Length: 124
Image 1 (cartoon, rainbow, N blue to C red):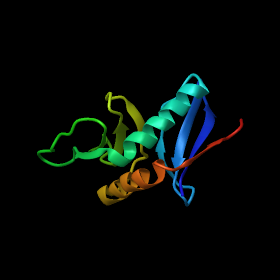
Image 2 (cartoon, rainbow, N blue to C red; image 1 turned 120 degrees about the vertical axis):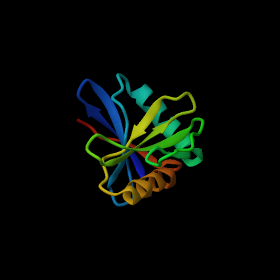
Image 3 (cartoon, rainbow, N blue to C red; image 1 turned 90 degrees about the horizontal axis):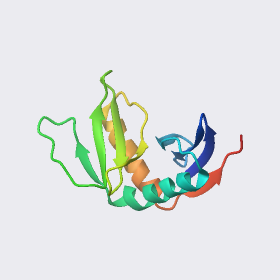
């Protein structure tokens, strides 16, 4: 079972979504207040299970309305994804993956772990 770990960050507070094996599968932006961070977690919990997958690595990608996962390649050629809420705001991002299949597995892990992930707070 996954969990959201709220932790201090430079200039604020953020969360990581961790899979059952404690691997970080998604990261948030830095928020100024814990309440805003918790709202971000609630948004991931609500949107991840229903988000479509927009594969921007395809030659002619099919576009979807939000919420959605956007799968893309960064400048270094690595695969990444971001989760966008219904309002278009990015609410979680992934690490860089060497293989597209690994990034797709990451998206499925976020879908699976976000909905009922417990929320824990890491102290500084």
